Image 1: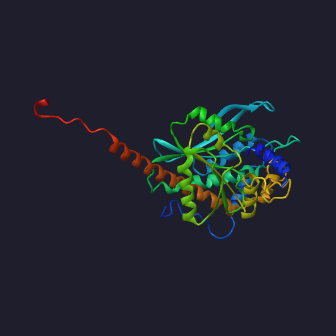
Image 2: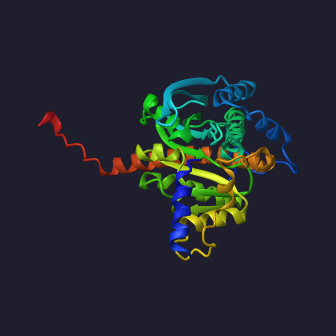
Image 3: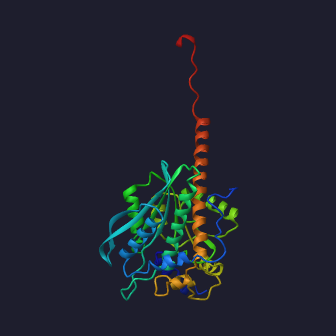
Length: 336
């Protein structure tokens, strides 16, 4: 997750002083933890992002996918030119795509080492792989109208460069909707942003319906911290960005970004999650495998719900077009 919003928020604190049936499957794993997810997340703890790329490719291959590595010229003023690598897998078939994104790169710390990047953003990567595996199995007996394209982006921390490179390469014409996940290593409160433009209204409507269907604690943020979603919304693509936390942490973050001058938080208070990410404290001990799995299944169900919603929208638009189309001119016998 980009960190500049936290800096701005901290400055603000100081200044102000103050839908019926389930789709993929029930989004609640069996009781107990998921040690496989924790063990998988540990493998991402590497000294370079290039090594994290290879870990990701290995996982996806083991799951039976054929990942495509799409390289791009990245880097920024601080790093200089630096090759990046998005990793893409596709599930299902269709003329339009529902794109699911999570960045797998970790931020370089001031001492030159790489953050473990578990909260930001290995937890989301593991959830997305859980979603990809679930959808791959679900689609064997359930036809859908869209492809599900999972894009694990690189260099999000350098300015959303992987997401921008994906859009530049593929364009936006095939993209019907985007689901982005960032900061989702623990907690069962689903946070989501509402600040991605009017084109995203149907995505939010579908998400809210699924939250009610599942009985999930879902918290809308009028202002939500930026992630890869901003690259898509800037291009006019429907998108939602989501994350998870424990309920207290989610409320604290909501107040920090949306509570205004009288948010009730102590002067200079920074939500704990923002004290962890982009530091040496972003570590494996925070990850809860059962929460990650739960979120992954929720993502899969949201993808299927969006597929259904888009079909309904298309059918409604076609019906409206038919009703408003001018009537064919009447003809008389003999062509007169």
